[in-house]
Amino acid sequence: MFKFLKTIFAAQERVKEEVALANLLIWFDEKARMHFEPSKSLLYDNYGYIKAELESINHAVTELANAPIEEEDKVQEKVKQIVLSQRTNFIRTLTVFTRDFNAKIPVDFSFEASIKFCNEANNVLDALSKNTIKSFYTAQHLFHVHVDKIAKSIANISSYLKKITNELNDR
Image 1 (cartoon, rainbow, N blue to C red):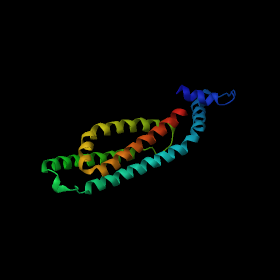
Image 2: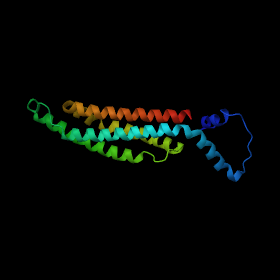
Image 3: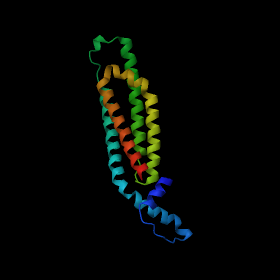
Image 4: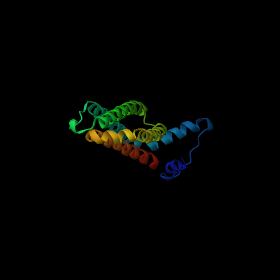
């Protein structure tokens, strides 16, 4: 927060402004909004990229759900049962993840909402990683192409979040 305040006042020649105590919050919000304005287009773009990756995950999950086992006659029945049950768990978890994550993307591009979203999103991605690690690796044995598409999309979401966080920290 202090870095943010320093950048507001350090970037400009210091001009003495008199503000009534009752109007102090309004004045501060106006100054903060002017300082944050250049970041809005980057946020808009990256939020759009995140939504596109979520759609890509939904598409890949649908493909994974409908994917047949290649060379099914060479796979033992017990292995097949284990992998199919883990695939089902993986699909269920990802469906809930995409639905909930999409709902958390802020509609407004305010500094506070963006910071809150990035923190929550990183926590959600960490939880997703912990909750799906077993299902991910198990499903990867027979459905590696589909599972790798999903992993790539999740990694892209993480990189977009990092870009947003870096931009917000620079402000």
